[in-house]
Length: 210
Image (cartoon, rainbow, N blue to C red; front, side):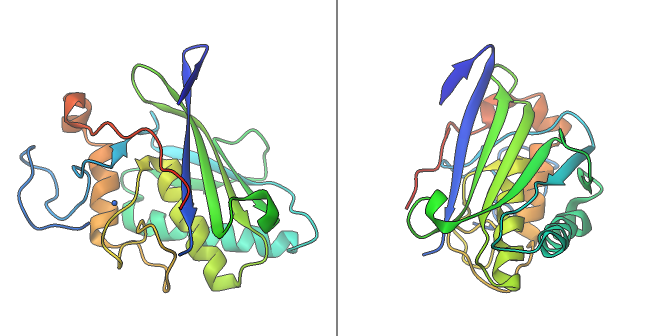
């Protein structure tokens, strides 16, 4: 992690190659099935209920219309599950909160299908900006899954689930589904209870490439 003018940069990487639990957790009143309190998970949050999302003009590997449609479908997976907490708004305007880029496989680590970079404030951990990069050569289904996974990082789940069925599991898999544990973990990131008790967050700052 590096600090610049009061902001920190965090890299979270998804490679193709973090667990829902019904057990009680330390904070009463929060959803029980989640992985928010796993030691390798760090939760962050945007300070607003609507987060804008822009698809950068892709190269020759995918048609612009396909890139936008896949991104919108990926965003809708989170909106349907957690739109009451934080809502992704796809916009044509550059300068959005999160930018999605479709890139050649050679621009990502070997075997990786996506990478997310987030800018956040050093003290509060509040997210300021995000960039999602996904491989342009994926099938439509794989692409939607990879984008949705990376959007999970960009929305504030900084780490991976250990449960293979969760969208935020570290290995890409189909179908793309935001599970109850995924949704609850994101809700916990935005809960006022957790906000007032930040010491309960784990200390992970980055997810290394696999």
